[in-house]
Length: 238
Image (cartoon, rainbow, N blue to C red; front, side, top):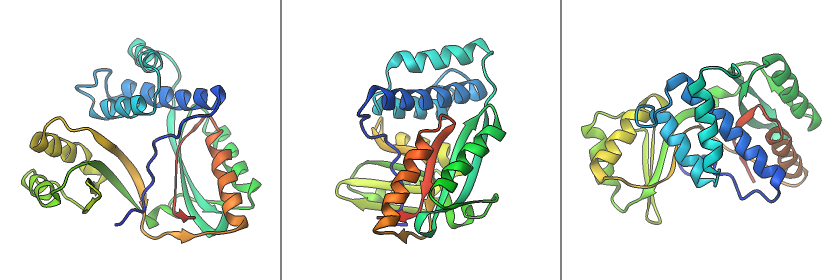
């Protein structure tokens, strides 16, 4: 499967406005995750993973606590997941995951981003069939055979395992996320994951250069500026 996946860890925001956008996106996602799966991270594995990722991205504790308290109250907004697909600059393939309280508005905003870079939003399934929906775990290690054995003993359907520069990367189907993480932690103790999430991993990459790179970077900036956009996956290779 190689290294063709996106590490979603946000780069350090350069301005308070950028930081606020990162905090807002995490706050919304934590709220939705806690509201749907329970506010106790020990009983909601997805929430625990999300909180850990937020902390790594330097989201303040008060932002996390506020989102969980909001979910605890049972009120607040009703957000729905929305996924849009299409072709970006240089004929790249793009998937945009959103959390929205107004799907019509969100679709219009995302379509505008495609249009501004002379690209085309597609229908459901137009590009997602060219991505694997994978659980990805990256952690320090030097023995991928031992990791594979632990996962097989737990009856986890492993897609791929890599060892590179003292880091083990495990790929598994997204449906195996909970089982795979439990097997790794049970076998190797309380390890710290560099990456611990579900992503869309492109099966092939599209190399872009010149003006396409500028347009693609502008495209990503436009999408990330939208409050409703949570994640952007693509197969562009610069």
